[in-house]
Length: 213
Image (cartoon, rainbow, N blue to C red; front, side):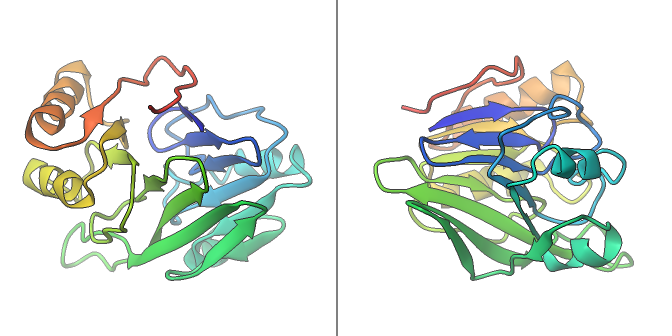
């Protein structure tokens, strides 16, 4: 498995059987122009996870890709070929499974209605299991080897991030959802998670393709 962090929550996951892009949002443009995708997946409807301006062109440039989205996305953003993926379901691509977990976005404020959110678990025999939680720290799937750790959001605090990484128990990971952080803030979260949890984070901000151990 190779993983490339394309900015904020956009992550490209590649195995010998599949090339999947998760959360092509408007806090990043490094995913613009990607081709040869098998899957375009969206965890929830917020524009930093699905860019309504540029994702339609991405879908058009990848005519064979399945477009798997949290159901609320289908009403909020018109996307060709979009199909819902709901919590506690999975889609198979040959030897690769993409399973959805959770169901609700983390609470931002009690006066702001919660929208849907599905975390995505990508697994295959002989490959590490990867978990992208979207914008929620509630779901704790078993057997995760590589964790995308949301570094900052208006819905999370450091204590919650640390406890989430501890509970998931992945040995490797990297920071996502970092588009609102400056260098000092990013380093603070990165180092705390490394020091206080079993998850040894790798800095993927240079957009390099990374192969977990």
